[in-house]
Image (cartoon, rainbow, N blue to C red; front, side, top):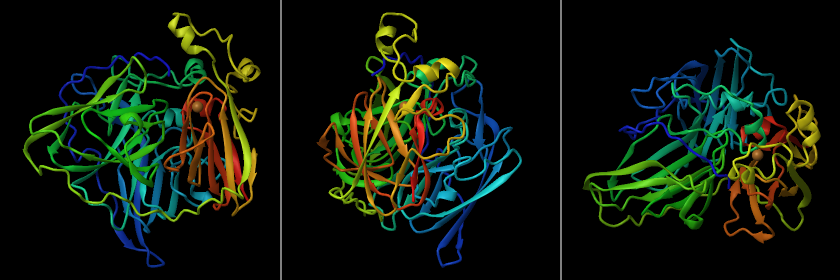
Length: 483
Ligand SMILES: [Cu+2]
């Protein structure tokens, strides 16, 4: 992994209450077909956010309904959601419902599934929540800047019979590049970020704030829904002294298991639902440490146990989630498609360790593109996306099973995201995966081969891209057509 220095802003006492960012939105009403309809308005507009504690000032940011992150939308599986998006920004926007298997026209991709929403204009999204799980929403227009400035929010679809827990909490993790005046550094789209690991910041927030402690009770069981909303930062969370169980990835249920090496790893856009039994003693503390970047581990937050005790032993309540209505791919009959990622700066780690600036002399396949306008840095099957790319690089027969055999032929990790579908991750470097997890975003290590499988059952033109938003902007995206 890249070595990265993270100069943190001062972390004074700052309590993240259970209610932080957890506003329930909208009231259910009777829909047309008897489905409950939930209607909300999201207004994208410039605002201010209290990302870092005083004496730092508030941070000028872009907000949904005046908040960073935007309102947490909670609904029940089977309900229908209608969202009126008002654009009060000075530029076009859209909203993408990350991980939700929406109809194509509701997917929020500018020029591909809709015209971008002009300043002063609005657009209404409406879709059924077929899958329960932890999802999120964000713009797909100039995402590298719009998401980074704060346009993001959680979308939680609750199961009809969720597993019993004492608290069900969302953590939206984000990573900000702040100046000493607590302003968002405006060096977007710089060549270094685009050609290396993306826009890594210097300040990590939970639900839009640099936290000091997260209050817990001795003996309580939490369902923690963790969303990585950062442009580029990968998290590898170590809940020191605790043993989280992963029960869902990218919203989709998975057999309950301990994360490998005890670390909950989330590339940009990925989510994990974990069951956390808080078995520390009253008055004690435990630290959540991010170990994603070797040599740059840092404290994310402390779990602070209050006085008193809820129970002595962990509860024996079952944690299994009911499966979502996903079509199972037929691996034996699936059609196989090779997908190769290339480009970007090679050997950047070595150069940095030697104290040298990146020379640009050791890059991969995208060299010619990089030479002429700096956008064609990353490639999918030899092509870097430019402008409003609309032609599919892959056409999948609707209703059939498909395997994408992907090769990361670059020196950097990439979280690859497919719209409109969830896929099973079936093999990594040729070895079958243990949990055969359903995901919508899969983190690939440098030089790694990953095979994913799914039934192409959602018709339309779907984005397929790296969710390191600087890589996406630098060419690492394409269109997959299901027809
Ligand atoms: Cu990438």
